[in-house]
Length: 206
Image 1 (cartoon, rainbow, N blue to C red):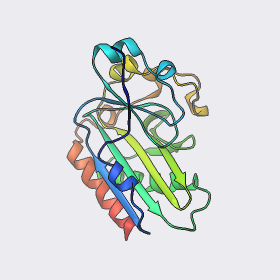
Image 2: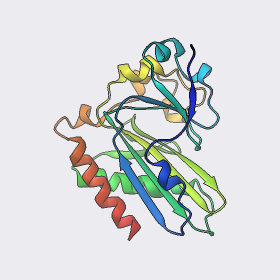
Image 3: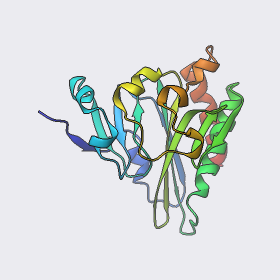
Image 4: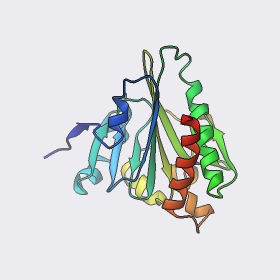
């Protein structure tokens, strides 16, 4: 039967196609499990294919770079598009967008979130958010996944250890490297976190 690799077609693809000179963002909550390959990833080296096929998990390839990620109902996807003919040094946009995510989490009462590596956010030394960027001419598409409450066991079940990793990972397996917001803030809800992020990103628009 095999696994069909599909083109990325999830809700934030609409803003990806934005061509108007402005800024747009979209925060959404996945309805099921999706596995999203980065632009240069291959299923054979990124996923445990037997488990993916057995559980009939949808596999997509996004236009942006970075490593394979998992989207689940316990995560939030934060995407933004910035269109400007003067876009330069696109990797600086990781810090720009991630700063607003940190601010949004602070609005929700989530503290001690810090930048790690090129594009991650972490609590302490453990990752809670990974992001990637697609850059073409005058467009920046920022795409991030925030682990609100997903268990590490689910991540380990489907995703292999990445071929490339940030320096601060230091070879750690998923269980020693990834954490979730609810592990540190068990009283925080998905809606509360979403509201804080929206308030912060709206400020960025204005």
